[in-house]
Amino acid sequence: MANGKRQRVHKLSAVFAPAATATTSENLRVLRRLINGGAEVGEALSALASHLRQVAAPQNEPFMFMPDLSQNKRLLEVVFRDCSDVKYRDFMLGEQNALLVYVDGMAGNERLDEFVLAPLLKFPQTDSITSLQVLHGLLPVVSLKNSTSAAGIITDVMSGFAALFIDGIADCLLIEARQYRKRPINITQNETVILGSHEAFNEDLSDSIALIRRRCRDNNIKVRMLQIGERSKTAVALIYAANLVKPGLLEEVEQRLKRIKIDRITSTSNVEEQIIDHPWSPFPQTQSTERPDKVVASLYEGRVAIFLDNISDALLVPTTYAQILQAAEDYSTPALVTSLTRVTRFFSTAVAIFLPAFYIALVSYHPGMIPTALAISLAEQRLRSPFPAFMEALFMEVLIELFQEAVIRLPQKISGAAGVVGALVIGTTVVEAGLVNALLVVITSLTAIASFTMPTYSFSTSLRVLRVPTIIMASVLGLYGIALSLMVIVTHLCSLRSFGESYGGNLFNITLLRDWKDTFFRFPNTLLRNRPKQMGSQDENRMGKKDS
Image (cartoon, rainbow, N blue to C red; front, top):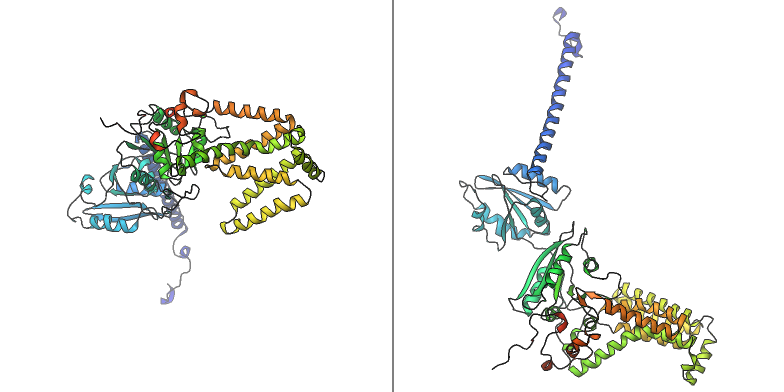
């Protein structure tokens, strides 16, 4: 500095020579390359470690957990990336680090705090754990299990279990801590009865199984658990009576369920359409029910019940045409009343399918079969209609279908008013407008009412599907078309199979006349001593052994 004065420096180049500056820049570039190279080496090592875990992992496992807790946590964070509801709780278990992983909302926080974390935090700080078996006697939890399967651990955590990892131990302790909101057990909505039980299944699989156990304290009632759905991993329960079910039936049901390859299970139809023998048939080949008492009665006939988690209906297999037409209340009313009701149902199936077709055949091809007074009145009404009988019937069918769909989709408070409006429109306005005659309105209404008498909604929709082809056949061939339609339907019924059993059942098999006691009619319970022969039960005697 000149003249004893301090010189203010604004640039580094003013002090250091250009050569020194160049050297510094080169060193910085070398350092930057080393840092980048170190990061790449770290990524390569992580990728190699991940690859080694996958190679060392057992078949069908995404990876393998290691004794290093920090590595396991990183793996879990990758698996549950963007899952904000997955919680990680780090704590000290004696001298070791521990990690508790659970899904908020599926596992109960209060249950984890009281029965898991509280006992673990009291563990002596000077001790260490070498085996998870020590915790089995420490935690006051009913269900505990050790697991080394990464896929199984991930599925259980997403199902509501809590997973406990401890540093130095590769195994995981799965803790039953499920506590999520669910619908309580309510009264039946679709299969209501006046006499008898009013309880219905809910969407919780454990509750549904408990409702069955409450009604039959029989150790021969078995529950076999499966899992289907490639992504949803839905729990499935097969319930059966081990000493009654037909040999080979349970294995057949299980094999069909295991063959299902679908990503998610959201309704019974996802399963039903993949296990039935004839998916293109309009007739339901499994029986769906929400009633525990109906399931119990079916189990003691030798049938198998299929329950799906998160679905409130059970599927009963095998199923016959006669069983579809049986209601739960049939066994709560006197035998004579039940017999009359069943005859009415069988008659209603014919009305629901053939009545509009019969009207078209008589009006278009066989008017001489109509009584004279009715024929004259009908001719006067048809003079006002610009359409042929076939178009009138088809128009009314479309209106009825639109009306039914609208009532089903509308909120319950509005559907009642919609019913009144629909009745006025269909019953009065259409006739006054001259689009159809009054007799056809009556026939269409009777047809709709007949389909409503069916105990099973799926069977009611089947009748609606069959009605249209019979109308077309009647419009082309008259009564001959109806006869041909009847032959086709009966032949189709006889050819159907439900898990190896004839869908027509004892209706067309003279070797099963014994089963008629509980088909078209219902005999008193004192005479129903045997189980249905068609189900092939191992023990056909229903009344037990007689006293000697």
